[in-house]
Image 1: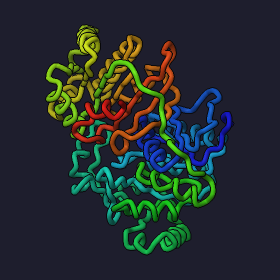
Image 2 (image 1 turned 90 degrees about the vertical axis):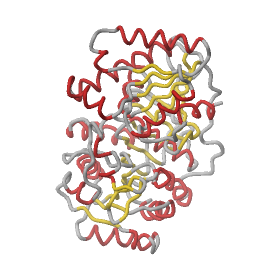
Image 3 (image 1 turned 45 degrees about the horizontal axis):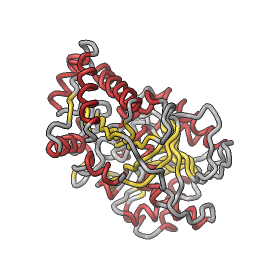
Image 4 (image 1 turned 30 degrees about the vertical axis):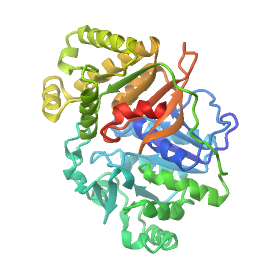
Amino acid sequence: MGMGANIVLGAIADDFTGATDLANNLVRGGMRCLQVIGVPQQEVDLTDIDAVIVALKSRSCPVDEAVADSLAALEWLRQQGARQLFFKYCSTFDSTDQGNIGPVADALLEALGAHQTVMVPAFPINGRTVYQGHLFVGDRLLNDSGMQHHPLNPMQDADLVRVLSRQTPHPVGLANRAVLVQGAEATCAHLTMLADQGVRHVICDSLDEQDLEILAEATVSLPLVTGGSGLGQALPAQYRAQGWLGTISEPGRLSPASGGALVLSGSCSRATLAQVADFLAQHPDGGFALDPLALTEGGQQQEQALAFARKRLSQETPVLLYASADTEKVNAAQQALGVAHAGALVEEALSQLAVKLVEEGVGRLLVAGGETSGAVVSALGITTLRIGEQIDPGVPWTQTLITGRDVPLSLALKSGNFGGVDFFTRAFEVLE
C-alpha cells in the first residue's frame, strides 16, 4: 500500500487527458487528487490524497492489451485500499465494435466478483448528454457531431445500448430519464430489477447535473462505476454522506508557476482547430505548423520549430507548435503515410520538442489531444501529477517534479474536444 494511503476512489482512465478530466471534477467536488501515469512500479506517497487515477493508453490499443493493463491497474488500486472503483472513458464513448469499453468493463467486473455496473458517459456542462440511451454532443446526435470522422475511433451510431451490445456478450439495459426523475431510490430499484434479469451493463440517461447527482446516490455502493467525468463531480458528496470523506479546504492548491509558456497541439478536433485559429489571431507570429509529410524528410522541420520556439520564448511570449489540421489535410497525410505512421510521426516530433524546451526552461506547458498528451508525458518521464484548479470544464492545471528542475512543471493536458475558443491564451492567465 502507498505511504499514508486512505483512498476513497480508485479510477482507471483509458487515456491521459481523460484521467485529468476526471481528476479535475473530483477536485471540484472536494477531493485531493493524484494522477499516476501507468501502474506505479514503486511506492507512491498518498499521505494527503483522497482519490487516485491511473492513466493508461488503452482506448485504441488491441483489446487484450487494454484488458491486461486495466486489470493491473485494478490490482494496484485495490492494494491502496480504494473503497470504490471507477472505469473512466471519453464522454463521446469512443470505441470500436470490438471494444475497448465493453471488454474492459467485463474484465473488471469479473475480477471484482461483481455482477453489474452503470455506464454514465454524460458530461452536461460540456454538452454531452444521453436521452433514451442516445448520446448527444450539443444538439447533435453523436454520429452527426464530427465524431463520425474521428481518425482512430469513428463513432457512427449514437444508440449506446446498441454500440455496447456489439462489444460484450452480456445483456445491456437502460435506465432512462423517466426512472431517474423518480429519484435515487427508484433508480436503485430499477438497477436491482435489471440485475435480477441478468443485465450486466446499464446505459444511463443524463440531461443535467441533477441526473448525475441521482445516479451518484444510487450507485455509491456499487464496487465499480463507469463513465465520463461528469459522474466524478457528483460522487464526492455521496462519499461525505457515507462518512468516507471529510470537508477539505483548497483541494486543488498548487505551488506558484514559473518559466516559459508553450502550447503543443496534435489534436484535429473542431474545438482544437478553433483554439489554434484564435491563438494565431491574437498572436499572428506565435505559431509554427508541423506537417507529417515534412517530418518524414529527417529532422529539418523539428529544428526549424525548435529555433522558432526559442526565439519566441526569449521574448517571454507564449508559443504554439501544432500539427492540428483540417480533415482534408489529415486524410491526405494518412493516405500517404498510413493512419498509425502519420500519428506516430506527429507524437514523436511534439514529444521531442517538449523534452528539449522543458530542459531549456519552459515551465508552463499546455498539450492538446489525448494521444499527444500521452506521448509528451511519457517522453518527459512523468509518473505523477498533482491536480490543481480548473481552466475550463474537464481541464485542470497540474504540477509534477521533473528531474533536473528545482521547481515543479505546470502542465495542462486537454482533450481535443474540450475548452473554449480562447483556451490557449486564457489558460496561462488562469495560472497567474
